[in-house]
Structures are given as C-alpha cells and as structure tokens.
Amino acid sequence: MQNRLLAAGIAHFNSPDHDTTLTNVAAGRGVCLAPGFLNDHSGQFAWIPFDCAEHFSCVLCTHREDQRPAVRDFVALLQALYRSAVAFPL
Image 1 (cartoon, helix red, strand yellow):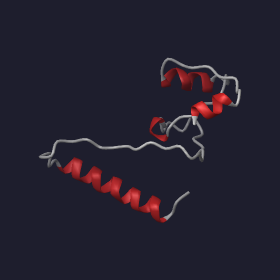
Image 2 (tube, one colour; image 1 turned 180 degrees about the horizontal axis):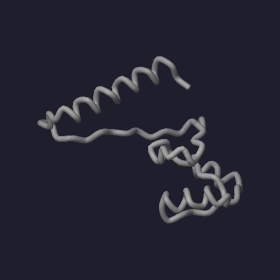
Image 3 (cartoon, helix red, strand yellow; image 1 turned 60 degrees about the vertical axis):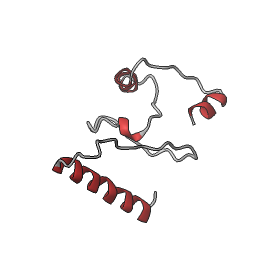
C-alpha cells in the first residue's frame, strides 16, 4: 500500500520511529498511514480505518507448554474479537 501511494507522487517524509511520526502529526506537518497495532490509544489522535487490498498476517508466539491463565485469557479474547470481526466485517 505504501509503495502504491508513493508511486502516485504524493509528497512524503519518513520518521525514524513512530513516536516522531506522532509528533509530526501533532505539529500539523502531515498525517500517518500506519497499521492499527501502532494506535497509542491516548485519545489524542483520530484513527480512521483505511480500506485497501493489502494486508499482513499477525501471529502470537508462545511456548507450547505455556499454560499461564493470562495467556489463555488473551488467546480467548483474540479469538472472540476475530469471530466478531468475521461476523460483522467493516
């Protein structure tokens, strides 16, 4: 997606890290096109879904024998969110 937008000839600049990107957005220097997992959840920025054909997979890696309740609860939460997203796609 980024390459497609750059090929369209938009003016752009790169930041060395996401915190700098958010600083540039807050300063009014531009906008940021970023995956949702970078959302800082501070309420200071508007995160608007950007529909595009590109996507990437995300995995949770843990040890096969990891039986911590927090890990089981987290996996159950992710599964519930996935089921809800599939049932009600954007």
